[in-house]
Image 1 (tube, rainbow, N blue to C red):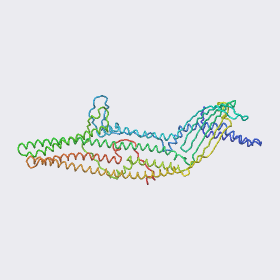
Image 2 (image 1 turned 90 degrees about the horizontal axis):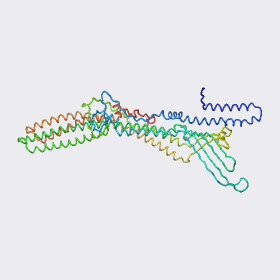
Image 3 (image 1 turned 120 degrees about the vertical axis):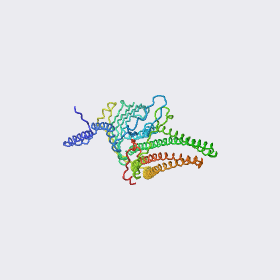
Image 4 (image 1 turned 90 degrees about the vertical axis):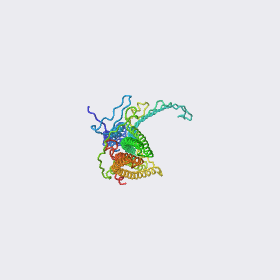
Length: 591
């Protein structure tokens, strides 16, 4: 059997066909009496069984529309389908270059040293860092507010049932005496209502009332099935106004994604900087160890020269003081190395027990890669597109634009058009009253509701506040853009400075080595003093540390530059939310 779906068009056609049928029958009749009943026949035709079918079909359509069609229309009007919150942060790494980061520790034995490259360190932090785990939850949490705003357009099913008894006294139906009565009453109401983005509220309601009084022989039942449509004409009209909260909630979710991207960007930069700080700290310990050995050797040589009479005993305190200074420096260097180890472990949060007792062995290239900087303008342009902070500010400005739209509509008076249609059935039993809904009894109402505060102060203040907030957001975005550009240009200058320092510190270290060699030979032949030798030793130590610091500072300056222009994640092959820059309207861009 072929299925036929009844649509609203079919209902309208059925009603119209019946109207035409009655019109023809009445118009072709020559009887004045039949013509006089035209209005009565039309009324009975329209507001009897077809109206009941219309009400039932309207309820079914309301339920079906709420489930699918309205949801789709809301998505299209609010800016397209609603994707889930993006909180995935992954890293694409070259399997040929890297080994597995670390197996899970399943035994209770303390794990061995953690041997990692800088790429593996970043990957470990993206997988295990606890702060990042906490931050990843924010987009999903923020997205729940979208469902809260979307719930405004969800169908609402309500039901109510109540009953009671009244035992009282009333004036007698005959005479001036009074009579006692007992009345039992009951009311049952069930309704399905939905608010649409157009500002339309549709309510389908079924009501039954029971009145059983001792004054009458039979109980009285009244049942009604009604449909009410309320349409906002001025305030609250249109999807542009009624979907503002949902659009703002969606923008808030996107803001949380850019916030996650900014946090990931800062985390990766911190991991890489801490990696190189730890590498620098380990190298400083090695330098102090080597320098301490040289200082001890100088003390031994000085004692030997004093014993043979080639140096006076007064030369000994200088080299001994230098030895003590080297030991003091070594203590500080070891402490700094331990601090950096703990900081790196906290950022990586490797699996296994006794994490804080693990040693970390760093694997990296001993030479710097060839890096040629582009013009500073290219880094500034990159930052204007990719900095998460700027994209968050642009989304905030878009939120303020929507608030202006909503509050501007709030200035209008409330003017609603409402229409109510209903079918009623009356009987002395509940079942019969429901069956009598197909009878001729109906109710139909149409009206207009108007409301307007005389001074309208609250809407005016809300609109003015929204305008000022939007202007403030524009100025804040301009200021933030300037600050970002200053940060990028400053980072660019720092990269150039750090790069030049590498060559200068290397030259200084070579001359310091030569100075120490010369002073040592001069001391051996009695043409120098222990104080000059100690000074040469100290200068060499400082120059060696400055050389490795220059290398580490150059690498960290590059990291900072890539962080400031927002390209660090792309350069490291990291996929994170907020990859697409936010585009503003021409009006906001011009502002």
